[in-house]
Image (cartoon, rainbow, N blue to C red; front, side, top):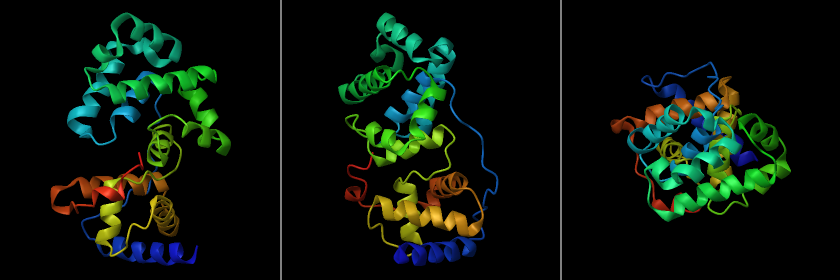
Length: 219
């Protein structure tokens, strides 16, 4: 715990030294209410360009199938049009993962985003969520963030930012706890600091390449 506290303090000092980084002190309420769009987002986001690949498919799901805001309707739509056509996606891994997530939720009577939010409030259920093949800690935290939980989802931007501050990415939990505690010290919400770092590191001049093995199995 002490190393996390010390690292968080170092991270805070680094953040304060960046004149071009503007902290967002207000948590943005952006929780998903459309489960088809939510699943599209969390299943496709790992390893893909969000702006050019993921976001257009999320928006298309919402605009073309507004009734897919609940699982029952989503399953009907998939049966009618096929998931491959709906997502304009052919690689079987993400399609299988999408269907596995549907089955996981269906087996537990999770029919909409509110149901999933309630489900994920319990630690034991969050552990169960990780039993879905291909979903790891990062996807869990990312899902919770999209459902308006106040959390950090450690991705390459977070890791790159840590390294820019001179801090090593020891493991997923260490990095997450360090950034969370830094947010607490700065008196900002954790999700807003996550978002601030994401936008800062998304700027090409701030990108710090990270080793691929640092993110392996974290999605």
